[in-house]
Length: 179
Image (cartoon, rainbow, N blue to C red):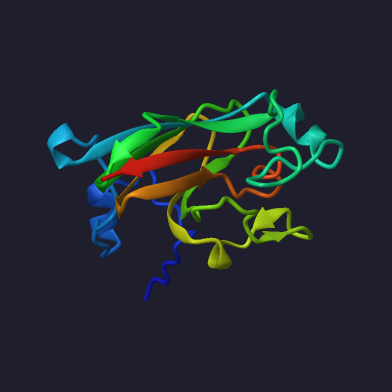
């Protein structure tokens, strides 16, 4: 029996690959979505090269509601286009534009008043189990793509990378879902 966890990487398997493992494709978009199927958000996961990690610990942490959150010149980040979408089915089409680093994209609900996500300092990552985790595109290698299809209600949401150190270096962005 194959034990699958939400951290298992499916990107690139496609429908046939998933079927060969006996898995359904519920919630996993394997082809580009059409406008009639809901909103599509293009997500770019980027960094400024391998030296980006050198800034960890030497600058204020840049996660949501952390001391350096508003500081410009992040070492890495996420760009979401568009940043405002309608409620309903949303397909996030992610691409890791890094030449050297693995990145991922996690979707989390944000409270009305932004507050710091539960951060595990020893592990340099957000505690996903306590951070309103709604879904993800796991560990994308450089230049790889992946997609996540979920239904979102009106509100604010956070897209972030939880590879150790990346969130604290500013790898996150907010999106707004309108009625």
